[in-house]
Image 1: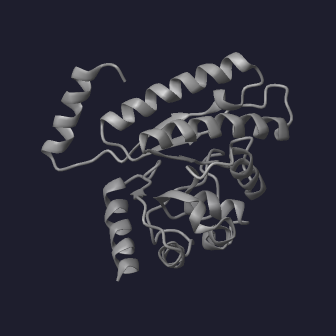
Image 2: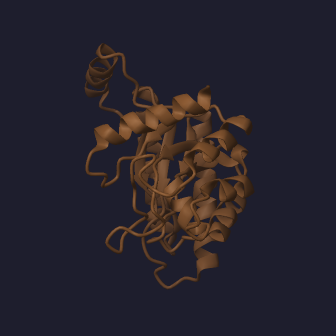
Length: 230
């Protein structure tokens, strides 16, 4: 965050193409570490990233709480994560930046109940969930209806959307399989309508994680978003 010359160079690069970097990402395993020192270091890293994000024109910071429990229970981990996320959300709020987190099937936090508990433990209006239909679909039983979990979580609790389709399976034992919109079984059109009708006005990005042709996926996503807007 203190490398102001390099930051100015980055801003000139992106603005010359009429682009904006809407979000940066960082891991959050340190945010629920059992020891205070590790959590403190994570918050210091977060503060630096947030100040950097502000300077390059970001509106959001995405956080991914992967990592193991390290000898604590899941409830203890959620309690510690909530405290860290609350502090991070307040710091980012003071900068005018939204904080949002995502949980995934390979994480120790991988259920709808976990997501709800993290939101409650964080207890901050500037801390939201990232809506990824592939993960919501798996947490909803791989039914192809991620909008059902979206409705239960509430659109007001969504920070931004990472739009992707899925077939309801894991990719090679890893995270939820990501597919171009229309290539999977998820009812993306209904999910977008739920977002729209719920008053969502945030960012929607194409999530091309391990999609073989991300350009094709970007075109298909744009068509779906345009159709929902109409």
